[in-house]
Amino acid sequence: MTTRMFEHVIALIDEANSEDPNCEEFAGKNWPKERLYSERMTQMLNRFNVDADPLMHIAVRAQHIKRWCSPRSDFPMDKQGYHQWRSALYVFHAKTVVELMQQVGCSEVDQQRVYEAVAKKQIKRNPDSQLVEDIASLVFIEHYMWAFAQTKPDYDEQKWIGILQRTWQKMSIEAHEFVLGGHVILPQPLVPLIEKALSGK
Image 1 (cartoon, rainbow, N blue to C red):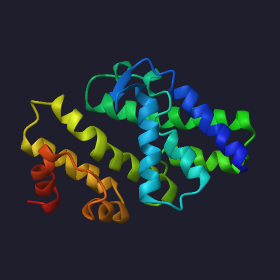
Image 2 (tube, rainbow, N blue to C red; image 1 turned 45 degrees about the vertical axis):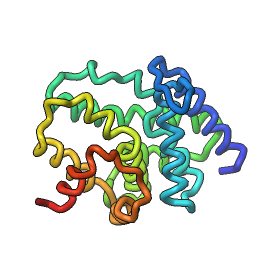
Image 3 (spheres, rainbow, N blue to C red; image 1 turned 30 degrees about the vertical axis):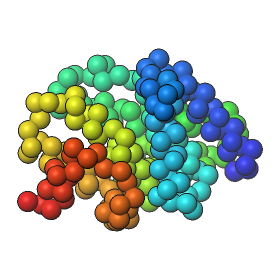
């Protein structure tokens, strides 16, 4: 993949995410929600893995591409429906970014690699999929966990410990070390719960 092709794909991803009708204010600016998310994903990747190649930058940038087009409400509002929605999202995001790569003329090999990473194929065995999962988890912890907590006032301590432990289990050893090494800004109100969840007590 040439530098020009890479930059073109990134620009197309940003253009797509800029269409998000949902907005979030950050640093005095009103951002399309998924456009801001994609920026945070790239920033975290640069902090976590400075050697990540262009295809992984594309995969990470496209983690939530056009997510608003597949809302949670399209699926049953139960646990099974939630998992169906998540599985459908992986495929939707992967197909969407591959279509952009096709427009630019990326090779089928490159398209397949990005597809598998964004679709979360064989996490724990595919290092590309694991990297995308790590970055998504780190971004959630630093930027979205506290906001999510505020929308769930009915969750008790055990519920939160379960959520935190499941997030931790999805991450690689390297991501664990990144968090424990103080490289992620933890939501201060949740630090006691995070510590308790990670202690296994």
